[in-house]
Image (cartoon, rainbow, N blue to C red; front, top):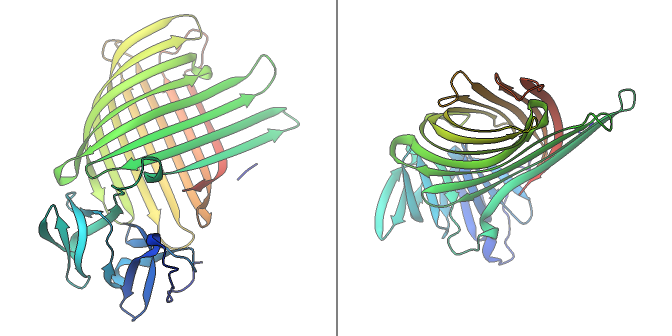
Amino acid sequence: MLTGFPAPAIAQSDGSESYTDKLHLKNGDTISGDLKQLDRGKLRLKTLTMDTVYINWIDIESIDSNKYLRIGRTDGTFNNGVIKKSDLTDSLVILDRGQEVEVPILVVASIQPIRVKESFWRRLEGDVSGGIDYGKASDILLINLSSNLRFREEKYELEFAANWNETTRTPDNNSSRAELGTTYTRFLRNRWFWKASGGFERNQELGIDLRTLVGASAGRYLVQRPTVRFELNAGLAGNWENRTDNTTTTSVEGMLRSSLDIFKLSLPVTRLSVNVNVFPGITESGRLRVNTNINLRNEIVRDLFWDLTFYSTYDNKPAQDAESEDFGIVTSIGASF
């Protein structure tokens, strides 16, 4: 079954344009590299001589960078621009559309570079993982592949997700579970947002050959702390299904979604994610679908991680002769980029 960073020191640049950001630390050291992001109280910097390092936000005295940045505040608002002056004992001064905006250091929650001058492909971030399990006694083969991609702009984020699980038992008793989807998130004031999503699903255990789902929702980040994030949103979805019993259905559903992320910042970096999606039937009265996904991710070494995932899919009105619930545990290893 598939299943320390060095202490701060002075890093020298080879003159490459990608490594021109400088962090001046309170202990007097200066680190040169490529600023990646500030998240969960740690600033990630890619260097030439120390690979990628994570530096506590409170240990940085000032930043020199000409990158176009998206500065997120603790109240959910954002500023976009280039750092003109940084004194992390006081505030950041951002040149935002020709105007200087002062952001108190205590309200800075995140920093993300917006690569406005780079191609679409170079601005993609994401990960890919896979796992395989085989038992000779039961003659069951389990295969899992998944990938997530993200594209960030000033006021929105675009996500792509793909997941495939194949279970091989006997030649006439195999099952396939697959998902392919995209989500557009538009950021609003005071931690509010709206989302538009669409995708395709296949789950032979529940009697679904192909499901096409298109939805829209609005929500809010109820908790945004360095180690905990929780969001809740609600909306409507259109559901088109081709079932294994040769029937088709078209329906409108309610859509309630919640997402909880808990982070452990000390090494090894660990993240626990819990996502629950509830779809109560509107035009198909009495129907209820619930999708649950719990993922524990543990970093093995830089950019390499181990995943343990529990998934559950419930439908109280499945196709004829199909199961009403499908669940499983998947282990995999993967890499982020």
